[in-house]
Image (cartoon, rainbow over all chains, first blue to last red; front, side, top):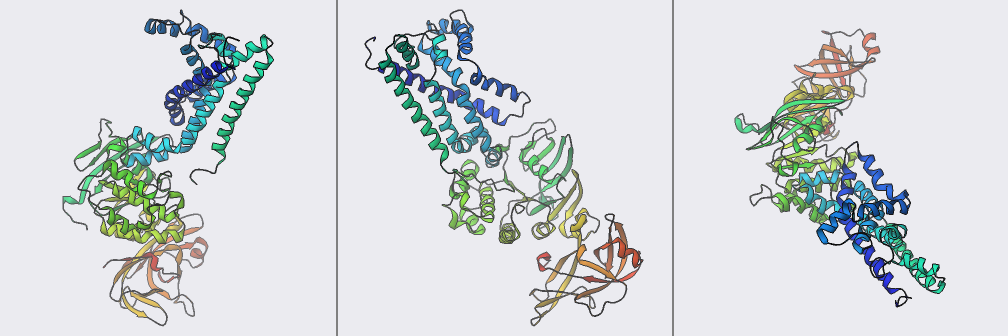
Length: 226
Length: 369
């Protein structure tokens, strides 16, 4: 409708958003998941509940507070403006931050459970062989958690693909900037362009199915080490 | 082995650890060579001692000095585990499952071993009999093989002290017998001092030179193994595992019956179903539960081993059992007797008795020389 070829623009934007969001989440989520996996702190349930919150909150609630936080007068938004001279709302960067909040549990939880199943014992063994905690983490925990990383990556991407409410609240509908595929579908339906809505929806179904297939394929193979 | 000069110790430790249900407070000298055994029941704190030495426990107070380096001082400054030259063999081996044996072995070697490591890789491989396993993953190893690899991995990280935490406890008897000879060899061939935690009298007497006995987080004995084993009231004689050592000389081997004769004195002899070297001096541990007493010389009995002795002491062990200390030609033997038969025979200290020993297992032997 806006001169796009069969919704290619929203599709590429969506993919870019999903990949950038997931990559950043793995970087940020790994230390958080590790802390949650090994901490003896009594505050652990509080942090676990916070991590899980995006699972149950309506995207509109998340989006509403993100809009306030990321807005030019919000804490994060005004900081961003002073640093980059750009707003966070209704931009791709803002969308990335919002998606990271939205998909946070989908990345952190698989990592946490992978780290928990590796356990503390092998870290101790590594330490008695001269490995510093960081060394032991990368030489023992990471390779043993590679299914956890794969699961986290697939879940992060798949979940970000289907994002709608949060994007609508903080990103709006700017072609090439924030108009992701779910928004585009909504538009087409509003305009009664069912054919275009079908094309995009089926594409999204295909992508979602591929992601889930990959996920179950990764996790259905026999245990790595038994 | 036991030089009496100051070279006998490579350091010392004083460890204090307090938890809600347990407190540890022990100090002892670390061996310069040979194997120091730490013996005690579960809950006595022996594993905690090793974990404190390795820096795996938090909130440890006290001091640890090994050679020139201070691992822990009274101000609470603790060197992190990876900076201590310590290696640890865990009960459950803890091999890295994603690495093959080869890479497991080089994990510590890469990170810590110096040019003048005291053991060579080839030596360790052949000593522990694992050269043929290098390409396998830990999942493809038997329990005994895993522990041998774990021991090799620890040795190759060039530790100043090697800590072994019941390395045989997770193995069944057959596997234990498979690994024990390797530990024997380790003991003889490696100069790295070792601390060996165990609750098995058999392992301790076979492998250790010196023994620290622990009870409820405290040290109750510190000395050479033979005296720990012959001291009937050392806590080695707790519960059903109680026993004492009898020392003697192998005087005869009866090829027909397949038994060796060990003379305690001219008259007092015991028999064991094994071929032993004539003239070897030997100490055999006799389980208190294998010993029974009789007021008359037993005749027409299947028990071969009958000695004469005198009751010198008796303690109530449980509500139903007493443990009597018997003097047999100036050696001490323990007998675990039911209270009922004790009273029926009206046994008491000072009484002369005949001692019958049901089983003398050569597995419980220590060769003195």
